[in-house]
Image (tube, rainbow, N blue to C red; front, side, top):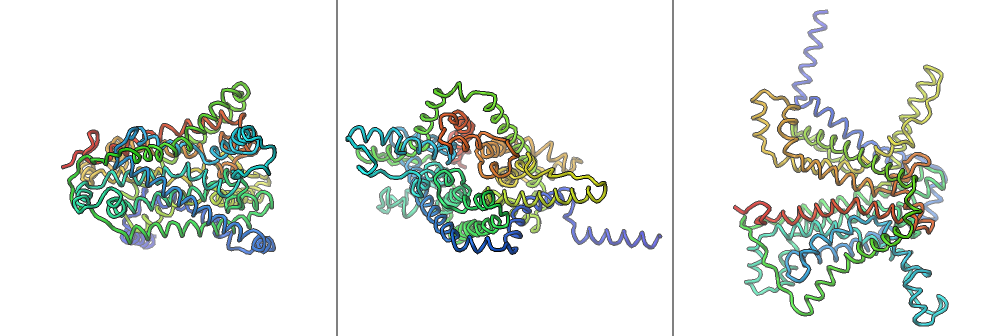
Length: 569
């Protein structure tokens, strides 16, 4: 016995010597990261398995259409968000014209408007029976559709336009932050060499901001791949719409998983190109001296064009849809404000709040675990777990149901064999499934925000706390949490708002006869009942406005030398 005990202790000592970084924090971080990766791995596993004749049917009928449509959607949205986002960011950062300060934050407002909501609004305005075409027919005495031509809003071009209007703020936000961080010295050097504002933009400012712009466009394209409500309402045959159709209408989980696996290839290529572009393009500032950006004063026609360029995205992407929804909300207020609506709002608040709290807690745990032991294995697993935000909601929904279904079947089989009773589905099609899906999708938001905040805390503070006898948990509670409280609140706010807007995950994972504001709006608007859904849609938009304003203030204060930010040394 003594020899055996000595052998076990020696083995444990050897393990600790081989893996000195393993402790409660790191093991927990690895476990959480593994769980977060499981749904994506499940999609790939099921997608690679044989699925019978349905795959040949999909290949011969719709697969080529899904691929071509998704590519055109990405190209269109990418080009549109690039032009609007970078152009407006340059104007409000480097130029001086009336309304500049208002546009600085107003250009972010369309981010609060879900793409499917703006699609419903513009369809109501621009369709044949809508007010625009009705006014044209009355003005020019047209009687039928054959008498005139009008662009079809329910089309691929319409979907590209709707998504561009609400996704360009991703490019604008990061581009503006990059322009605000640029040293005035390099811009002055360009002016001294005889280059005007336009040439300085293309030869100096744009290359310096290129990494941030690439990230912004990548985020907009990831949101494009995730969109379900717009492509479903416009009958655009994208991969997301195809996954939903194959799963629920053809009743083939395996076929949906195979489509989801192909869509993952789009995501992987997108992430890879973004990383490659950032690695191959490195630019460095030549000075640490910063002062307020001077701004090019615009006069005459240029001033008018600048105002129009900044005003049109705000008006079309936020003001006009909000006015339409507000008008309908007043008309249908008594009909919409009922116990069902309040119940759906409560469901949204409950799910979003639960996801936000859990995401922040898990994000803090993982970020602190990486801070304690910055091991390669740990960093790789955490990065993989953070890829959930890049994976479309429809893909994650497939993986979540496959994963939870396997767990449910395992529990049910064990209970049948052991106690002779059936437990049925405990996790699949429940609130647990929806919450798990939200966590996997939005964990990157909380982890990234908290990790960036923790990275600003000097390691010497950890050493000082340890020298005073505090362990890892005590150091986190007494030192780090008070310092990162603002970032934790920001992370919670971002997860909450994105969960309120999330549609594809919720549609697929929600329990039977369970609605959130997003699913309620989608159901009623799809049935041409926008008036009844307007109050719910306006509520979703309202929840997104506050974080947008906070983001705008944060960007404005990020410029070194700003009166409320860091002073240049």
